[in-house]
Amino acid sequence: MKYLPLIVKNALRNRRRTLLTISSLAISLCLLGVMMALYYALFVGGQPAKAQARRVVVRHKVSIVFPLPLYFQEKIAQVPGVEEVMLWSWFGGVYKDARDQRNFFARMAADAGRLFRVYQDYVIPEEQKQAFIRDPAGCIVSQALAERHGFKVGDKILIRGDIYPFDLDLTVRGIYTSTDFDDETLWFNWKYMENMLRNSPRLMAGGFTLLARSEQDVAAISRTIDQMFANSEAPTKTESEYTFGLSFLSFLGNIKAILMSICFAVTFTVLLITANTVAMSVRERVREVGVLRTLGFDRKAIVGLIVGESALISVLGGLLGVGVAEGLCWVIRQGPLIVQQAKTLTIEAPVFAALMGVSLAVGVASSIVPAVSAARTGIVDALRFTD
Image (tube, rainbow, N blue to C red; front, side, top):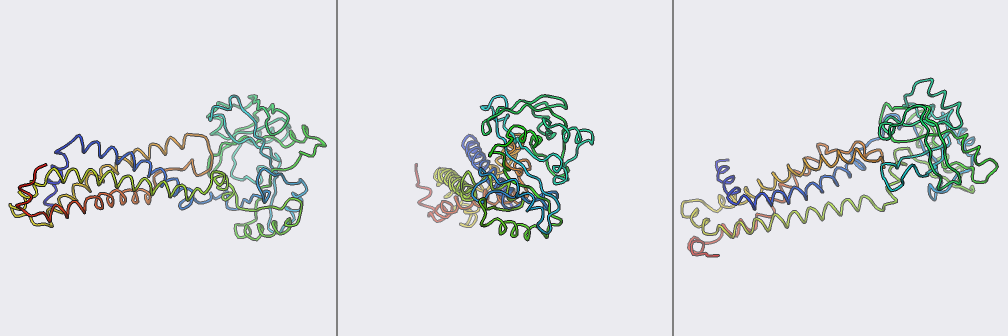
């Protein structure tokens, strides 16, 4: 610690270069921080909400784009441990301008009478709930979605069909909140689908969401359902609602590998930036190293001064990068909901510790070779050195 004032003074001797180096490190570590925060939220720290623990999704084994027969609902309801089953279907469609990403949100048809028995975490006034159940053209929207688009009870919503050959002309009958997490979903009455696709072979379920009697029943229920329909015309894949939500990321490829690749690439880039800066700084002060050796500084002290300066710059860049990364996480949280974990994205304590560890390690690793090389330079050779 007695050399700290000298380390700080050396770091500030070329303020422009130090500032540019810190900025470069901050930008790189900001990207690294967002990637690590996303990885942590998706695969490490993210846990199913309490209300999700008993919910299970049944979909087609091949892909969610393939529908399931309606009669599956009755068979699923007979599986031991199942408390309630609700069919649903993804409508898709276009709300206003499809080019505006803010207009993207889930539009789901569901059995209105069973919706609130499966999603017990939904909170909605009783009169709004009953109005939704009674109205075949009614819909409910989440509080977050209502705030984003200014929806109010009684408003009309027109969604142009793209998957289905008809448009939705809906009336907002209620606005719900959740006790566990906020989603951005519009639920409309399954009766609307029945009326528009009456006697059509396209009247099928996109999937089923069921409520298990207990968390311990989920695994057994999943195995039983998949075995039941293994040899049917539509084999199923049954998984927890939390896992089902993460499965949407599989459309983008191997997310784990992608995130890890970006993290390694950014870390390597940071190492190169810092190593180049330290090498330039050491080269400029070879004669000063000779003077310090003359004044009695041993080689360990010389190495400590150079490594300490590099570590200080790296840590400052890391702190600035973490701050910017947290700001970007906030921006992502305000955007459209792609997966549930995006709404809780932040720089958690383990991610912060990892980022600061990376920044410190990069600072030390990039400076150790130039520091040792400078310390080993003879006093006479150092004093004669000219650049």
